[in-house]
Amino acid sequence: MKTVCFSAGPLLSDEDLASSCALLKAGHLIAIPTETVYGLAADVFHPQSIEKIFQTKKRPVDNPLIAHISSMKQLDRLVKNPSSILLRLSEHFWPGPLTLVFERSDLVPPIVSAFLPTIAVRMPKHPCARQLIEALDSPLAAPSANRSGRPSPTSVTDVLEDLDGAIAAVIDGGKCSFGIESTVIGIVEGKPVLFRPGAIDRQAIEEVIQMKVLKPAANGPVHSPGMKYRHYAPNAKVSFTTNYEQLIERQMRERIYVPESLSRENVYFHLRNADRLNYPEIVIYLDEKIISDEALLNRLEKASSIKGLSGESYGQSN
Ligand code: TXA
Ligand code: MG
Image (cartoon, helix red, strand yellow):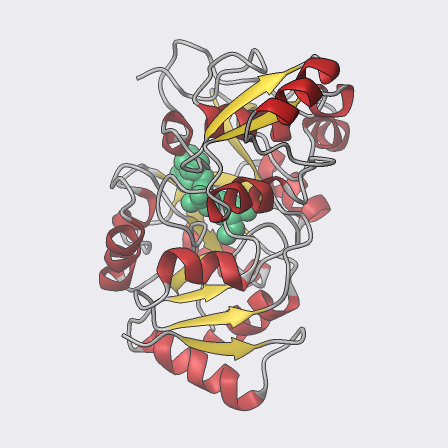
């Protein structure tokens, strides 16, 4: 299949919007820009297209998807008995990079959330994602638009690197501004739990609800199945150091990739770039800024398969 590229700057033209909606209605997959990372989208109410998402990404079937909405009216069809804590968070952070896990309504095909009784929902801020969801008049299920296990895509180049020829279209909305995925919050036994650290910091969430946001129990059930897999990983080995002088010495002797000014915004670019340039190893200098960044540290830990960097556990037990 030839993958068509539509440009959005930041919105789609009427013609490209109509073509995108027609492709989605016909059950095709489209990669779309969001403010976090690119998503691989299909109509949430089309079980066959949802199945295609799993096949195309080679995603484990027990890893649920996020439904993306453009209005609160769309939330009603997706969820039931919404928790007041989650509604308060939606009021404050939507549209934006926060995903909330509600009880799933019976209208939603169970395959969307890997047959869990819950459904993850987020209202993205990216104008083009909102334009498309609004025009389609249906939420879009969208995981990150990478092959499963690879670093998430933050540009059209990244999407095509993994999925060219495997999807009907990609919408070019430029570089993603946040560069890492949304924060995922759920409710366990009535309390807010951080299923995945991400673009919105835990502290900001705690301030809004005036409650502690808990970590999932290290040996408890897996609440966010995606977090148990090795993830975000380049082909190159990923390792860490806190000794800058030694790193510079090593760099003079060996061919290692040392990302400069590593940040949330450029982490996935660097992980992919090292592979493009065929480096065998990426060595990351852990400075204070990285060490104190829960979300960034989590992604680095996942990319490296070295456990315990952050001292956190997000559903790795199973
Ligand atoms: O920023 C983002 O969240 C991006 C953009 C495209 O929206 N999407 C994204 O999707 O990162 P994905 O599929 O790569 O990651 C979804 C995460 C996984 O860790 C998954 O386990 C969790 O959300 N998740 C989804 N549904 C869930 C549910 N019902 N209960 C618990 N966790 C859920
Ligand atoms: Mg992903």
